[in-house]
Structure formats: C-alpha cells, structure tokens
Image 1 (cartoon, rainbow over the protein chains, first blue to last red):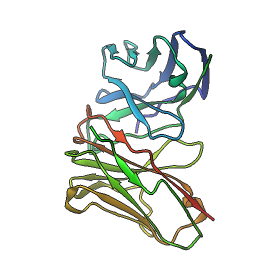
Image 2 (cartoon, each protein chain N blue to C red; image 1 turned 60 degrees about the vertical axis):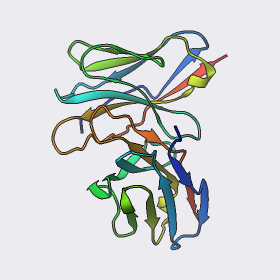
Image 3 (cartoon, one colour; image 1 turned 30 degrees about the vertical axis):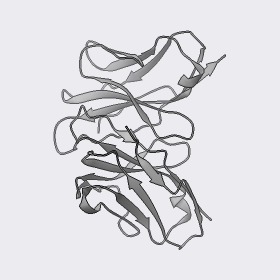
Image 4 (cartoon, one colour; image 1 turned 180 degrees about the vertical axis):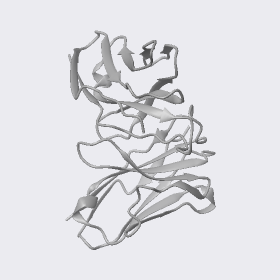
Length: 113
Length: 115
C-alpha cells in the first residue's frame, strides 16, 4: 500500500481555519485520497475524498497538489467538535485490494476555545 | 438511517479465555469489515466480507481469531484463546460495496481488556 505522512499533532483556535497536510509521494495513478476522522471514544467517520481535483462538501475541503504528491484537508471554521484524530488514507482502485482502507497514525487535532 | 450496531460495548476477560463480538451493519450494506485498534494506533483491518464471502483476511491471526457472516448480514468475531496483546478496540464497519468511492460507516466498537 502506498504510504502517507502526516504531522503527529496540530493545534487550532475555535472559529479559525485549519489546514491539515498529508504527503503521499509514492501515490499511484489509481489511488484515491480519502480522509476520515475519529472523535474520542467513537469509530472513524468519513470526511471527504478525491482523485485529482479539489473537492468541497459540508464538512471540509480537500486541496490536492497538481502532482498529487500531497494534499491538504481544510476545515474552514474549527469548532470544539472538530477535535479528533484525522487520517489521510490512499485507497487503491486497482489490483486486488478490494478498495481496502489502511489507516496510519493520523494527526491529533486540538481545538482551543 | 440506523448506524452500525456493535455489542458488547466493553468486555473484560482473563487470558486464555474466549470472547465473541457481534456486529449488525447498516441495512443493505454488502461489505462488512472488522478492524482492530490498539491504543495510540490507527485501526488495522482484520477481515473484509463481501456479502457472506471473505475477500481479505490476510491480517487475521487465524490460529486464534475467527469470523463469520451468516446470510450476508450480521457478523461475529471470535477470539479463542485470548492473549494479553489482544487488548484493543474492535471496530466493525460496513459499506454498500467495495467500490473505491464507497464510504465506510463505523460502529462505536467493543473495548476488550485481557487481564
């Protein structure tokens, strides 16, 4: 599986934007970039995903570099509820991986009031 | 829409005992996953079902772990005998299918402590 690299932790203030980076220099052409987050004592939840173009949904935006070797998850206005572990995951559309979701260590986001 | 249901929420056992976890996926979801999450780490996939067939169990310790999904709906994960290193949260997830664009929906997990 192609590997992602994320900072161990980041901090933000409430109502400010947050940019969570992810490096994936060995990404292949069939890899989709997925983001999940895990709130305390809960299972992970889907945030957003994309292939080449930037993506927006009600939760966040995903900015993908032109060479696809990195991406950034953008939370436009952080709230206390956004404090979680954020996982950047490459999901392979090809081969026999059956779209397996392989989690790394993630980034622990702390949001200050 | 009801979410993925898991039980029990917590389980404490002694080493060498057996334990079973139950998962009820979202109605209509064909793909079901069991993940193991050790404290401080990201979840690790143990087994993936497509309907009632196994498509990936490469990281399942088959000497002690087993899983089944009868009739392609509910699933159980069993550990027999348990070891101290099995202490973890066991997460069940489901999705409509295994397509790359399908979202996974996770349950809240079963926290297992092996003493």
